[in-house]
Amino acid sequence: MKQWNCISKLINSIKFILLFFCFGISNSLLSSDNIRALYSPPIGSSPVLDGQWTLCFANGFKPYNNLSKCHPFKIPGSWEEQGYEDYDGFVRLSKLFFLSEEQTKDYTGIYFHKIRDADKVYINGHLIGETGEFPPDFKKATLYSRTYSIDPDVWKINDMNRIDVWIYNNARMGGITNEAPVLDNYYNLLKKQTYSNYETIAFVSVLAVFALLHLVYFAFHRHSFDVLFYGIFVGTWSVYLLTYTEIILDLNFDLNFIFRLNIALFYIIFISLPLFIFKFYNEPVPKYLTLVFAFVALNIPFVLLVPNIDHIYLSLTLIETVALLVTLPAIIYIIYQSYKRQLDYSRYLNAFVILYLFLGTLDIYFDFTKGAPDVGNRLLGPYALIILNFAFSAIVYHKHWVYYQGATFDTLTGLLQREPFIERLTQDLYRFQRNEQRLIIIMLDLDRFKSINDTFGHMAGDDVLRAVANGLTQSLRTFDNVARFGGDEFCISALVDKDTHVESFVERIHQAISNIEIEVKGVTIKPAATFGALEYHSTFGDDPEQLITMADDQLITAKFNDKGSILWFKEPLLSYVS
Image (tube, rainbow, N blue to C red; front, top):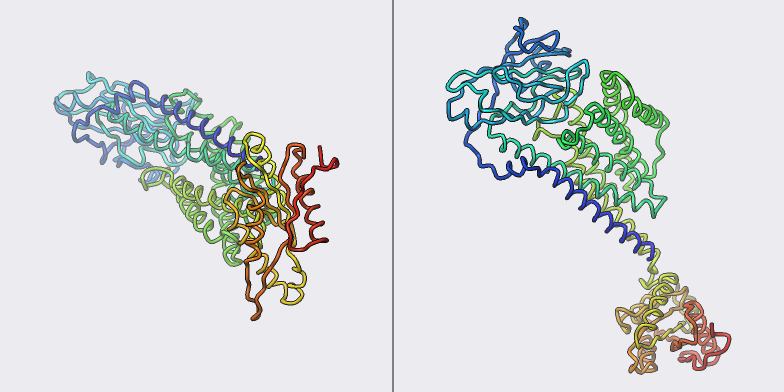
């Protein structure tokens, strides 16, 4: 119980820390520009710069040169999807569009949901924004959306305007993906980006809470390695999602380091999920999977330290392939076996794990083919992960409750076991010292119980024990303590008001047992009990086990001299004084 109280206090502390953290993150998001964004009114329909653009390949960044290798190009999209496969390098995407005088006053910003990888954006030859850096000091910014402000003076009023988006892409799908650029009031666009960050921070916060709770649980239950690996899995997901937010840009972290960290976190997720599933079902990890996990673990320092960032994709492609072809089938096999053998909780947990695996596989597929998922333009795995979190947390709670029940209550009678009873008796002693109450301790034993077992069988004996336990519970108050000490022995402790007639209180409990009648094989059994009782006095000391021994001595004497009676401890003997 003390251990559980410590856990509760630590959990509350963690909740406070996380709330403080979320509050701090919220404040960082609510900069003066973001606050203005939240209250900026919409300006009506905003032109989406989709449809036909011009794609020009370049040998380097040449913003003011004419380019000859140009082709029609559709936005949103990647050039790999539109026939220009395996191209990594510089491109310029251009579009002409007309703006009226009214529109040039309203359109003070432009929003890009996803550009892979680094970019510089020009309108009518004026640089309005850039994210990442072009070679030779390449900084990869593929994870982030962009919102750039536009000085109204750059617009050509009632005329054709030109936008040029220079992009450097070093791997996989390049282009303006997921959504076409949007022109609007800058603060409206910033609001869209801010809300997206809030949504991600909500995911991050929820996952962080779950992760810390599971890691704290493991700290107190060191045998629960399934909880440890799940805590690592969820905690890693929390940080992984954080790398996708524009908060990273505001904090001026090195973009290449964040990209490396993003991949390293993905590898930890890759390892921790199957380890959790194997440990949850108490299955040994196959040797071939152990080698796979070791290989992935070795790739974590590789992606963090390899000088050439392009080499990271070789590692990532290999491990994503292994995830789909090796690890995923192994997990599905374990899930199938657990369902077939009807293991505890398998039916519920497996459903949510399968949902997560399905959406996670879609995330990997989209990363291979389009650079991001089509559904809502965001990762899908976290949505299933939130559901999985609640399911697994409920399972852990239930498993702990079953363990607590088994360690606290007698499975046959539902009464307290010896150790929990002694803990509660210790608390009663503290209350006795603070309050003007009287403390009664009773040891009781059923008379001729062995003959009931011998005559009617042990099942009948169990029925008698359950009936006596029920009679004791009904005759006592909800805050009194009653335990089965083993066999047919029971112990009671009760704090009563100082005006209570304690002899009558105990006689009422004794009579409650005498009133029990049980029909077994056409015969009525009427159990009887002998009581050894004492009223606590401060001179008895404060050792609960000593007090129980004192009451038990009275029980033994009563059983020897007068079965079915109540024998009170009257005079404190010297041997009982602490």
